[in-house]
Amino acid sequence: MATSISYQGEPGAFSEQAARVIFGAHAKLIPQEHFRDVFLSVVRGRSRYGIIPIENSVFGSVHENYDLLLKYPLMIAGEVTLRIRHQLLALRGVKRRDLRFVFSHPQALGQCEEFLHGMKGVKAMAYYDTAGAAKMIREEQRRNAAAIASVQAARTYKLKILTRNIEGNRQNFTRFLVLARSVRPSGGPMKTSLVFSARNIPGSLFKALAVFALREINLLKIESRPLPGRPWEYHFYLDVMGSIQEEKLRQALNHLEEVCTFVRVLGSYPPGKTVKG
Image (tube, rainbow, N blue to C red; front, side, top):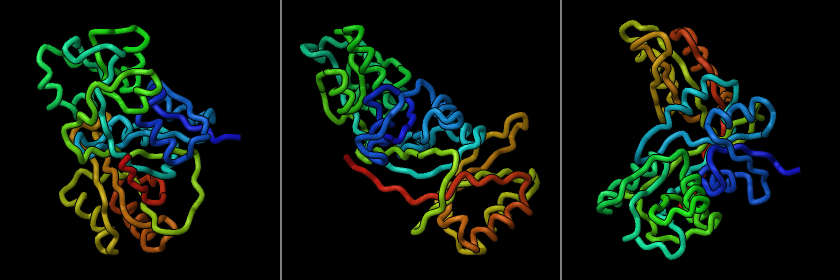
C-alpha cells in the first residue's frame, strides 16, 4: 500500500513537490485546504505523514506552523529544502498586455514584488495557494488574469508560462518539515527541534541557551513566538545538532528543564537535502 501524505494546497503546489522528493512518485498525496487540516489528518490517522513549509530564505518563518507544532501532538520526522522558482502563468493565447490581475499566495507575491512592480496597470491579488491560483485561472477562464505558481502547476492546469523564474532573489529556498505521530530512532548525523519557555527574570534566556554552549552543541536556529495569554512572554523554538539518543544532548535537555518552565522535544531527524530543481 502506498504511503499517504497530507499537504496544504492544490495539486501542483510546492508542498506537493517537496512530498514527491521525500516519498517518491508513487506516494499517495492528499491535498488539504489549510495547514491545520494537515496536522489533523495525521493526528486522526487519515494520513501517515504530513508535510508543511516552516521557513523561507527570503520571507522568513511560517509562524502559523510554529504555533501548530506546539498545539498538536506530532513529531518532526524529516525535512527537505526546495529551491523555489516562480512562473507567471496564464491561459493559452493570453498576452502580458491583456493582464489586469495577478493571483498567488501572499508569500509568492512578496517574493516576486520587484517583477510585479514593473507590470504597470496590473494589481496583485492574494490567494490561498499558488497552485490554487493557477487552478482558479483555468476553471474560471480568466483571460485578464495570471497566476504565480510552479512549472508543475502549469502542467497540471494546462497553462502557458508567460515569464519564467520571476522571483526577485535567486537564493529563494523553502524548508519543509515531515510530520508523524511517532518516529523511530535512526543512525547517522541528526538534528533536534525543541521548544521551551523561560522564566520572565533577568538572565533566564542566557541560562537556557548556555546549557547547549557548555556542552559544545551547535545551535542552528532560534525562533520566538508569543505565549498566549501572557503578553510579552515567549516560547522559544530551537534547532540544534545532535540526537536525543546522544548522552550530551540528553544532559542538556535535563539541564534545560531545571532552568525553564516548559520544555518539549519536537523530534530528532536527519538533516534534509537541498533540491535546487
